[in-house]
Image 1 (cartoon, rainbow, N blue to C red):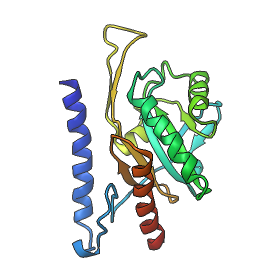
Image 2 (cartoon, one colour):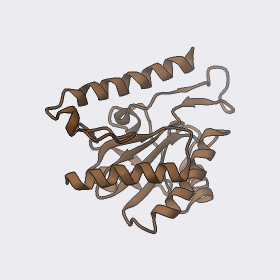
Image 3 (tube, rainbow, N blue to C red):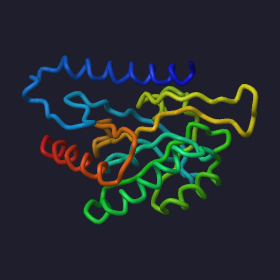
Length: 207
């Protein structure tokens, strides 16, 4: 039931987003047919403040001017997170040779266990350039809240070795700090690169 509730919450967010897009003055013929693209009304990310894996402040100014791939998870995740980050490591390796303004951000939804030290070790394992963010995902302007990521901590009976139900999608922010797209699982580097290329080409043309 918990997993169904999470899926329902996530689905409600995307339905709402799509409905707002359909209310735009743009006609259907003007809207691009690109998988995962949220257009013509991408969500503008508001000011937020958290800490990265080095303990430094990280906010809106750090995502402006860059294409940011966001994945929400936790370092104790047994499968989904390490698989997704491994794919993103390969994706980043290929994209970084062509794009200088790309960053991969791992946002913890389990801040109690994901200390800055733990995040630092975890990020370094996949790629030293990856950014790990800590902080309370429940506060109003957190990236988790703004993107609308649903999650559930199964810690009612455990305080240490619990699992967290969460989204497996990768979310894309453009250089204007707008939430413009989503890459659904299962993840493959070539698929992500193709999807990103189509989305970024379209967005750049609009700017």
